[in-house]
Image 1 (cartoon, rainbow, N blue to C red):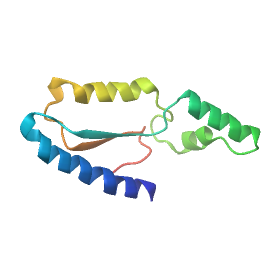
Image 2: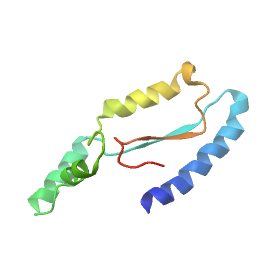
Image 3: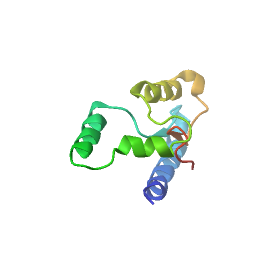
Image 4: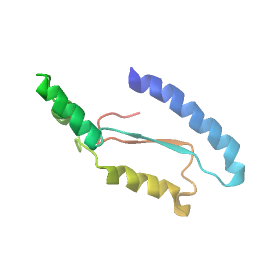
Length: 104
């Protein structure tokens, strides 16, 4: 349900902005990351374990199809690609980077 709502909001905004800004040579894209390994995520997961709750990371690793947890560098790689002049025709896209956990 969250994915459905997110896509209903994200998609139209990206498409509208693309149509308005293309004439100025500006591309507009969105990216939707999956689980990204950060210090905050580790703290939340550890707190859950301390309180006898299951590890969210372990639950997601069981579900993921390709790569369970992204690193910040994975996101940075995608963002740096779509920001380069060579990707000038990549516009109006909502790009999932989530290890295959869900598809639009």
